[in-house]
Length: 180
Image (cartoon, rainbow, N blue to C red; front, side, top):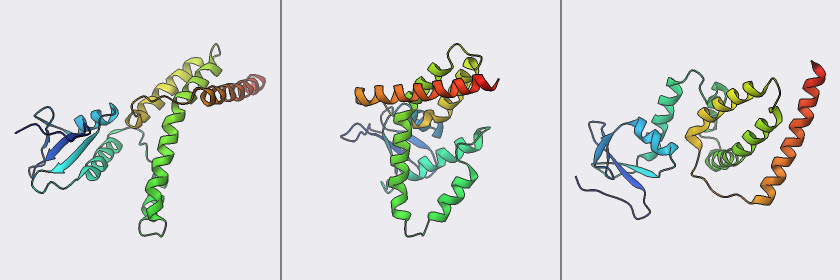
């Protein structure tokens, strides 16, 4: 098989009738776990049906999510969210949902590092410090599939947001200390 790349550096993955996935960049067969790892690394790929050349990336990504959800002790997609999502199919608002979910996830990813920094700073030196670190490690593990490659954010607004979060967390810490 010859190596095949798209012009923009996207890796082309071919899916054959026997359900095997072939990475045209590395000239090797891969699994859904390999595709999940590529996603976590921020690599772009496109999965096409080897016979028809039809783009089936959406279906493969959905399959990866289903496997991840089935494997984990604590699923990332709550049942109530799934019910609401299913109820949106056929609704007049269906066309707006993908854009909304994409924008929400992008916002979540942007704020993740700021949140982590603020939480760690707020609990430093307190009995909750170790617990906060463990919780943040679990939080990072749960969201690792959604981390994009690092991008620069505007420094001024980022610093302001971090300062505001630290101040709020400091106030919350004071309240916790007063309670016991």
